[in-house]
Image 1 (cartoon, rainbow, N blue to C red):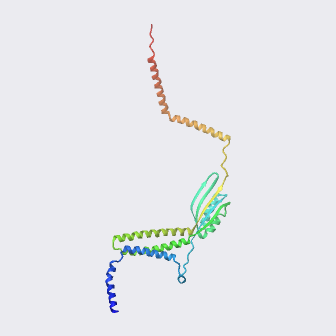
Image 2 (cartoon, rainbow, N blue to C red; image 1 turned 135 degrees about the vertical axis):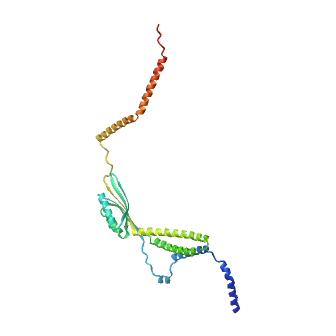
Length: 288
């Protein structure tokens, strides 16, 4: 028994240098670390707790994340008064106008408004916006629950943050430039994923905190285009058009006076040349 123990101890001492010589480099370590930590994070998200673990684990409250949207379209009998009332209502409930597009024609005035209002006052604001309308054409409210997506994205972002911290530790242990570059390349990809997740979470937080209202209101003045003018008015317009045409023609001639003068000189020159040529061809009278 004693001899067996001594033999085993000698074998362990002999194998110790061999184990040290075949240790994995830093690059292999951080790749294996990422795989292990990512797998652990995913597994912790997907695997349910056992009954004993569920009893011992504290219940964490999860706030529900709901995005609310409303679409309103109605007519009004006083466009300007309605515009002021909408601005006052939005301000009253702590919201703001994100964008506005107004179009005015001889038949109708129309305004399209995008409104952001706190989720806590969303319903009251919608009711007050349509309260003074002459007639409501459309009123629809939708709610989208993004709680599951939010919790999943938040958990994955925290897992990537843990991997990032481990890479930072490995970077401090790097021994050459190649290992440093490899770790920094991995860190860059992880940090891009973290920033993308943060941006998505902030987007959802904003839309959960502030609900969207797409509002369109209009005032109609006529159901068809104005009628064309009568005979006397059309006759007067035709006379004015003729007179304006005559003036334009006269002004055009005046503006072309150099060309007209040149044509006159050329005509006189040609006429004199023809006269001289004819006089040369006519025989002189002989006195008998």
